[in-house]
Length: 480
Image (cartoon, rainbow, N blue to C red):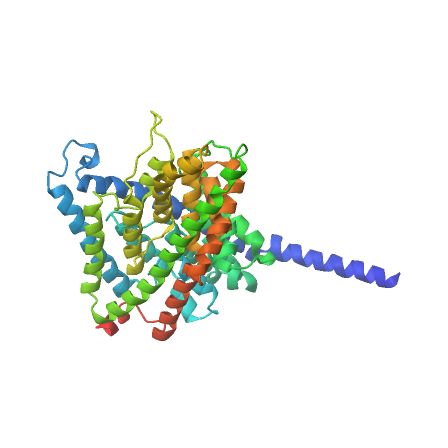
């Protein structure tokens, strides 16, 4: 009986210490306060990127002669609407790559591989170089330039990187538990970046563990969830509670026949193989560009920028930008009930534009372009599906192709399936989308054995470890 009393007293004392340490101490309040501030800032940055994409799209429409400047009637005249965008995208590629290498070394790439690389790196100067105020500011600045320059980039990767930076930087201000410093806060910031970028909190949580962390860690789960929720609340307050990234899609697979369910296998195989091939090309292309930059730091960006300009010319300007407007126009009918009929060459040309943007290493994501390519593929295959598997709604075909190709590229099947559901509210398509993602994932792995983000993280980490945590501008001098 005395042992029981001793155990009870010990547990009471430990509980009291826990409450004093985690609830009533000034250090605890400092930790919680900084955590909330960083999560809210992550949401605000994601919202700013969304606004910057809209502003950049309007600006580029003016350059293309498709809209007036700031609502005026004056438009870019005649041939200038073709030549000016080509010059802007070429010159901006050179500008961004020069700024990146001179002043913001470490901001290269989408940002997700950098977050993964940071998790693989112990505490020290190398990790501090990957996650710093300089990196966060540089990522915001360079992505903004890219969004205003017609680059084929998304904004989710930089949202992840900036979110990881903000959450990690608070550990430099006050003390946090070791498991949060090592992984938890970086995972939370990365997941919050995805969640806030697409208003998809569940997908953000899944992505943090499935792709960034590549394992489920129970002791960090609460931190990830809280960070994602706080960042998502900011976006909901700014954009409205009914905001859906693409818009509502009301379709139901409940009445499909067995033959129609077989479309999942067909779409998953095509999307998975194409996405896996694209990912493998990006990984190899990134290594080639790295060697070319050592050869000449001026010609390489100009060649990549000119390639984007040429694709813009051939596509009639459709390859410029993230691809969100095109994907939305393909998937969501307008007020008259019509959708955009994308030409058959839209998907391959958009994929090529995304390829050149990614291998350049400029800050920018691949979510939006990949989903847009998937939407183009889906619309191209709608007549084929009507011919051999009639009765499937065109929107269902398009959504499954979007998920299949996207999964093939990033090899994160749970995230890809769930994020499409959250972006469209199509909960009745949950099973078909998840099954399509699984099929695409297995097919992609046959071509690209190492997932694109993991491979790019290894390339980035190898470069950092080889060069060391050099001050801004030193790598440019070394390249010369």
